[in-house]
Length: 178
Length: 178
Image (tube, rainbow over all chains, first blue to last red; front, side, top):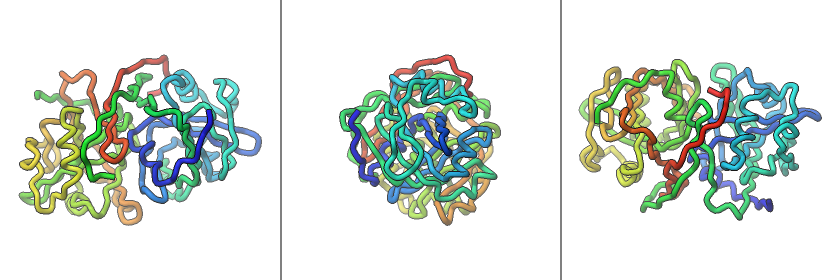
């Protein structure tokens, strides 16, 4: 997949529809991936988002320590890997190897991109003061990548208990909304 | 539409997939509706969610003052009303009248439900301390309603600039995820 930089003011268009994402992170020689659905946009530009990462997740400690991660957006053909990453802990498992995913170097953070995902958002933690009370992190997207060949991304949207909605048809209405 | 109470531990299944929602609120005799896509789950039970409501929105002041709102989830047949509510301010407009929507009494809050939406979540503001810095409100869902006749809700997911994805097919994978 040949990725191109996505202008940062366009990032909200990837997050706002609510796809399941995969959060990749690294510490020393160890990488990790977690599946996440609890996230939202906070600001258009610079793009800022908020997410909830349970303190039980291995990623929580890595993010607290390194302040860096990548938000990767998978499409339907990766559904089994998405569930696999959601059902395992990276503490004793190399998820890239276990699920046949390819780490790729990021431009601005040490965490790896997941090459198979059509979009990747390199993030730095901006504010972790809500992590104790709500497990909430505020992330700034500092670099974004998109596969220009993917026109209508069949993103996954978790309905709970392993049930996923796959992005359907699109409609366009006259709107002044950003 | 005959609504039934939805058990509160099921609320995340409505929010996690990332649908556009309509936030209804009221102050004295005045009601308001705003369209929102920046929200996420924070906790399963009791169900807590976070959302971003710009201080430029009329709803911001009402929510700060009353601490109550209803999160209503529209489906595709309401798309024009969703966009209409997103493109207007309630300061000088009765949006229920303007867009032909029906206010219905809530059980636990003074804000009205939007009867045409297949699901309604009555919310109380739990924490507004991030509203100054991030326009963020933490809401607890205290009562939830669902139309049991709607099996596969064709929810709307905003892709930006008036483009919406409509919820497509669903798949189910073996998963230990909640």
